[in-house]
Length: 155
Image (cartoon, rainbow, N blue to C red; front, side):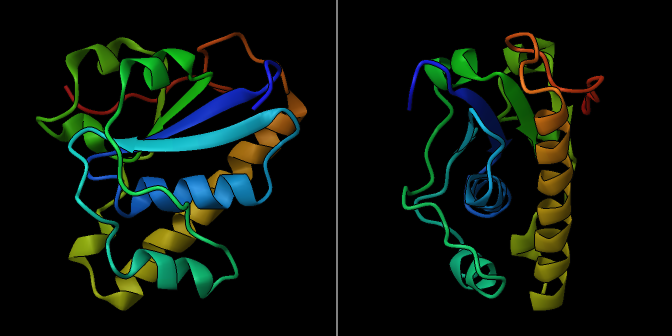
């Protein structure tokens, strides 16, 4: 990472499916000067066993790190924050709701059959693609501000 890198932070509850897939899709073709990281508000011990095979099915390698907790440093260093639905979970830190962010409010694929998992994966891939296009069009958003008007979920 260089000082010029901007960070997109993808967050979900367990960091076992949705946010890992978003990180993998984003880092497979990041806009110049950007990189993605992911974390969970209550991380799982290991990725969902279907995450890696479902990513490889579409030619993308999963992140090499295990599920990890959201740290204050990750939160503060993020230029763009995207939540996958963790705003509705009790494990979501209250301060996160005050940050500019985009909430995709996607269902947890771990609770779905393989076809449902693929639908969520494909939705994440498309949203990441659109986010990348948006960041390429405006590569230097104000620090901490999402590239578009924030969409907040939860209370």
